[in-house]
Image (cartoon, rainbow, N blue to C red; front, top):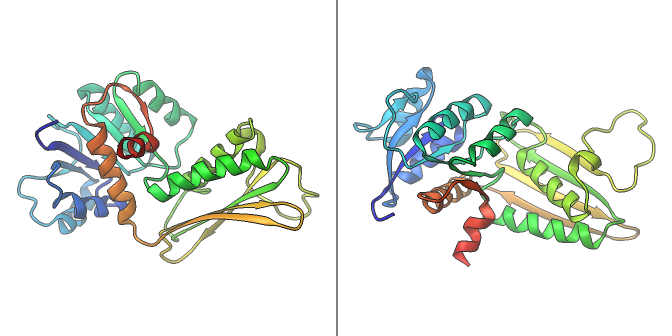
Length: 264
């Protein structure tokens, strides 16, 4: 695409929305034409973006000529973004988490008509961590495996989407599904650990951007694989890279690994 990508940001008043607005205004690859927020949040988005004379802080009414939508809103906001993308043909990059089976299925169906990239985490480091964990879980099938994640005290879903994505990768490495292996809570007297399960632990507090650690535990030794994010802008940068890459792509389900592979 020779001209700038015409971009809309859904969830513009949230933490990730603010980070995106701060970065995209100086990125010549994009023209930001719409920031989707609730009416009582519009002033927050305007404060983050600065000069908004040509920018709409509103809903999807009258939106047109958008190439890519970046969505970091939540299940409701994602549904509205999907409505727009399926009608207009715009590509969708979404990092919304806490999605149920219905939303996940709808994303899959939408990918038959538009290009869709859904990632629990847009960090390059997390993408590498995911690959390493998949390989380690496959190489050490008899070792116990737990995933520990920590986020700020405003995060509503648990475990995080990234923790679940790591769990899916580990389960796949062992030829199973996460539904078969996951243990999301332990309390009281649950008894001895069942072989092959993947445990999860969650921490919520302060302003933690995002930390994920996978523990593979054998007899007399253990491996710790982890990633710590200290700046939320790494996720926004990854989302913008994904938006630049997916503009004009054919319908289908794409991944952050596809974006990374194009840079190698």
